[in-house]
Image 1 (cartoon, rainbow, N blue to C red):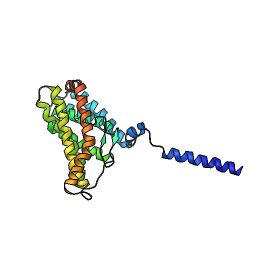
Image 2 (cartoon, one colour):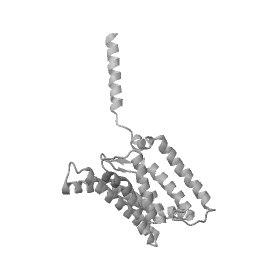
Image 3 (cartoon, helix red, strand yellow):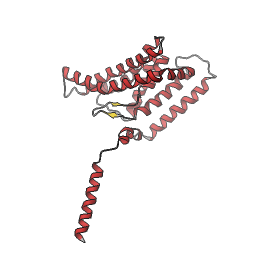
Image 4 (cartoon, rainbow, N blue to C red):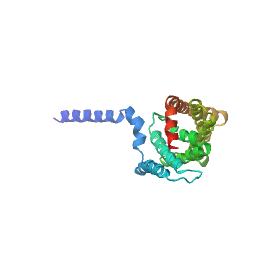
Length: 241
């Protein structure tokens, strides 16, 4: 009896060990960051969405001209909320920061393309601060600025391509410019990050390659979406604008 009980316990322990060591599922790997959003984060997303809808509804009777119109604020809030949700879905995560998401940069770049570079830079920088608040890395002030407000703010450079009359060319080009802006900031942040272990060209080359591995895919995803459905997205935004 004792021998049987010992064997049964050993089998249960072995099974438990296998369960613990089992790799996480693909669904968990992709969506676990979304599930880790704190309660206040979900509340903020809902506030952005509902606030944006309410602002848009009230904007129909508001004809006052300002730098940031009510419609701009409403669309900006909704674009930020959408980017937050998409940024928490990680198709692939790099070991030292950075990840591939389902085009989480695109809503911010669309806003910049429709409303201009300066509003786009502003919205991107605000998103960067919000992204850090949801669990970012802080190693130094330069790294923090480059990884968050500067990197995401530079997505607003997508607005530089809005002068091109053909949106089928301008929007994909804007996505490339905005992605490159974020990539440049990420490379500089990487040089700061690896300054203690790598110096000179080694730090630059490592950062260029490391950040290029995920940013290139992020850029390709955004460009593909702009080519496939970009005209529809712009039409919907401009009808609101």
